[in-house]
Image 1 (cartoon, helix red, strand yellow):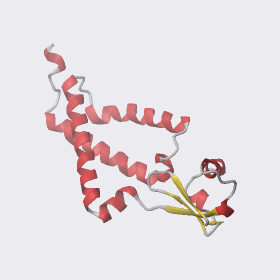
Image 2 (image 1 turned 45 degrees about the vertical axis):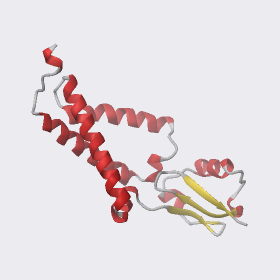
Image 3 (image 1 turned 30 degrees about the horizontal axis):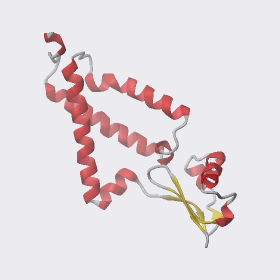
Image 4 (image 1 turned 60 degrees about the vertical axis):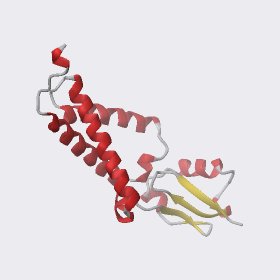
Length: 157
């Protein structure tokens, strides 16, 4: 019973490792682009599962204790809460973490190369139009890929 509570390294190692992995993964996901956070395909789910499994060792190392994993998760959740608090109070930090929206359509015309730059397949864009009851972009004033990966459309009036 003692072994599940015995840590192989000092407790703060788990906190530091968890926070560093959290911030590193946040940077990597941010560099991958907004689409990674939007529609989740089967491929996206597989990637998330593989990333989680791969990063486990980076976070807890060789430790197999119950307590080590809990301390790591507590560190990650605390870092997430602190980052959310900072983002809600500082627009520059929020922009750095979330990014800016990208225009896909302006005044009813597609922005040249926008879908390719944002890694959005034509079919996914068409689904976003159809989800709003639109057949094509001529009835759209603007379409934006938001920082959360969703496509928002404003209809022409």
